[in-house]
Image 1 (cartoon, rainbow, N blue to C red):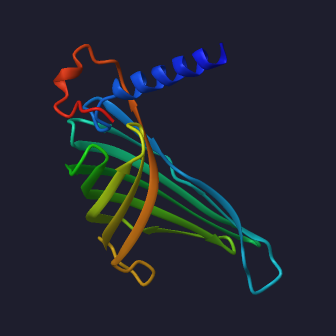
Image 2: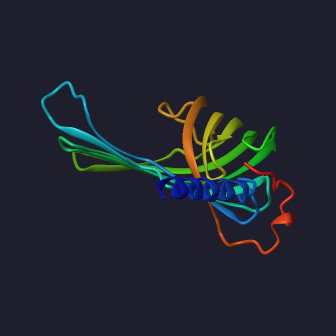
Length: 194
């Protein structure tokens, strides 16, 4: 009985894997994000903490093109200091296919970034709006879960002494979710098994 259950489980897993479609199919949603909370080392004895929340969502408008929106909220507080910033980042990404699991990407993001500082009762707001562009690479472990690395150049539209144009490297995980079941899976030109 145990052996039959294992064989049935194996057959179900194989059928499920082979029924999957290309990871970036048109109509697929992508979600991701992160969270961090950590103490900040200070020269004095005050306790200061940094909180960061970074949710993002995207939608594949074609099998290779993704449009998305990221939100980055960051706050530094404690010891009479409060700094916060919120960044809204609409973005586009295009996938160049190498195999069913490996892709190169072209990335473009417009970062609308406002930073609020309150120290000793004085409030200031800085505009750190920028654009970021550059290449990336994606690898999908399954059709829904992948890892992505990007190398971006960020150009600040209103530079000041704290915002310099720079290169950055990032790595993240993504989860793809189909928006609906396709009636005709053959309509996806990348409907290979994996």
